Every structure is written in C-alpha cells, then in structure tokens.
Length: 359
Ligand code: OGA
Ligand code: NI
Image (cartoon, rainbow, N blue to C red):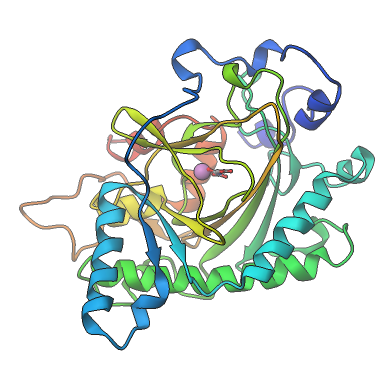
C-alpha cells in the first residue's frame, strides 16, 4: 500500500501549461461525461445564506439569537454559508490572494521546485488521487500544513514571491481563530458544551489546519469540464476565500447546482465529513464543484480545519439517543479517512458510505 503513494502513476501535466499552450480543444482526460458537465446557468432564487458574524457578540440578545439560529439553519439545510464581518482582516485576505496569484504566475521551473507527491500532497500539484488513467480536473493547486506544529514545515511552503511565507502565516493564524469561533457556535447550536467539538477535534493545539490554494486557468472548452469535480470536503470545517472577480463555486441543493455569488470580503464556510459524522448527520457536508471559464482565470484559497489525525471520529454520545441511533458505526480516525480518500480522488459523497458499513 505505501509504495503506491510514493509517486504519481504517470507524468504530471500542469493545467496552466495546457492553458497557456493555446489549445483549441482540451485533452480527453479533462472531458467529463455528459451527466457531470456543468450547467452554465442556474436560474434560481435560492442563495446560500449570508451571515454577519459580528452580531454574535452584539449587546442585543435577540440579534445574537437570530444570528445563531440562521447559522443553525444554514448548517442543516445547506451545509454552506457565507460570513461577513468575520474578524479576518480584509487587507490580509487581499494580500494572501495576491501572494498566491503571484506564485502561480511564476515561471514553471520555479514552481516545479515545489512539485508534490501523493505521499503527503504538500507542495505544487495538479491532480488528486493516484489511480492511473483517472479523469482529471482543470486545476493546479498548492497544499500546505499549518497545524499541528509538528506537521508545519516552512521548507514545504513556497519560497517565492518574497515575503509570502509571512503573509500565509498571518492569514492561517487568523483563519484558525475564526474556525475555533465557528466550532464554538456549532457546538452551542447542537446543544453541546461550547468546547465540545473542539475537544472532539483533539483540542486547540492538536487540531489540524492546512490550506489549499487553487488555481483554475482559463479553459478553451469550459462547457466540457470542471475545475473541481463534485465532492464533499473530508475534514472538519472549510473556510474558502473565493475569487472576487470570477464566480465558479456551485453547491448542490437536492438536484440543482446553485452558484455562489460571493459578497465583498465574505468567506464561504462549509461543513466537512468529520462534522457530519460527529453530529450524526444533523449537519451535512454538502457536495460542491467548481466551473471554469474561457475568459478569466480564478484563484481561491481553501482553509481546512480538521480533527487531530489519530482520534476516532464517531457520533458524539450526547447526540446519539434511542430515537436517533448512531448512523456511523464503523468509525475511523481522520488520518485513516484521508488516506482512504486519497486513493480515489474527488468522488461525490460515496466516501462516507465506508463509515456506515461493517468492516
Ligand atoms: C476545495 C474547494 C472550491 C473553490 O478546495 O475543496 O471546494 O471555489 N474549492 O475553489
Ligand atoms: Ni471542497
């Protein structure tokens, strides 16, 4: 099993190189079957809720309660919400995105220094999953660890543009604070003690945090492919900083794909599989996907806040009752779950099924 993860099964092609080679048609491996191709227009009155997080600490109790309630409904009904006034400095958000945009615009040989392997995925990558001949998505990315400190290794962070490590560090630090706050809110909303989810994640020092900067180059045939295939996020919580200039992220709502229109300096929060398991599916990790386009590239920063790798993740005792028995009874640690997912790449939500079947 370990050997399989040492390297990619075939030479890696940077999507950026394909994009810049002015192809008129995309290679077959990026062409999705008809049923998976993007629907370019979703005329829908439905939008992902936008929540002003500063209201959580308002002096006005009814405003606090209303905000908690909005988050509760968003977690149950959407698995997604946008937050504004979230405490992460807008200037830092802009600087972080700019640093990553500059990284992706560096000459290829400077980026290749950081080329990743499926062993840890850290670094510059162009695919998920190690299956030979698997279909590919239209994106390049950079993945790095921020927490726990034992996994953080500046040598695996980009060295250019100059000063980017400091910006990434500052950005991740603020994101961790936001995620800790969100976990407290979700715990209270689930009727738990405020620190319950954080403890289930292994505490503040041991919880995992990592980021994935996504680069979606321009695509000559956006109607045939996807920047990211439908998937749910495997971890705890995701906080996404979207591109302000280009929409692309779509969220599944029953059989519709709803395009998220980001509010200015908003962050997009979504529930990952681990919180779905801990909450015994009261909260859902909802499928999402990314469309690309022919006119503009897109950069997004996904920050993932995850349980410590070696704690068992199973429905919380306080939530499981005679009337609502545990639906996940084959628990895994997050490390085990992540390894399992990495063998397969983005695959709708079938990953969670492994937790509901005896092993
Ligand atoms: C992800 C993701 C969405 C986007 O990185 O898991 O869903 O808009 N990204 O880039
Ligand atoms: Ni995602």
